[in-house]
Image (cartoon, rainbow, N blue to C red):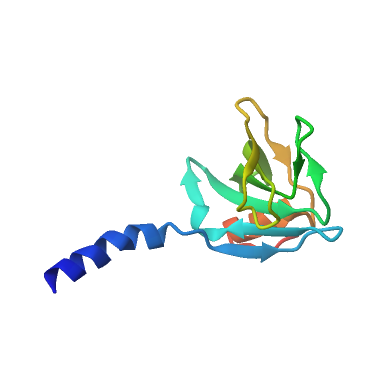
Length: 132
């Protein structure tokens, strides 16, 4: 009995870190999600992962075809901005298959969030305010 409890306790941190993808409104036949479990405070801002899958294959910055892209961004609730930190491109529409390309951005500046965009819907969840 004790051994079984230890195994269950060891599994708890893994379960707590599993992605919790929540659908976001997306334009033009795309699908978009935010991983609610990835939202973490980073100074006055928040980091979070989103995923978008366009209706047809697109090309990465290096010209490789992809079906979904996950993006790590730093969101500022106060300034209504997002700074792109990293993108991971996948060959599967669910963002699971093989990684096609990974791009880390070190010097991107914050971008104003466009109303009624995927980033606007993500910001609403992160900041717990209705999207404008």
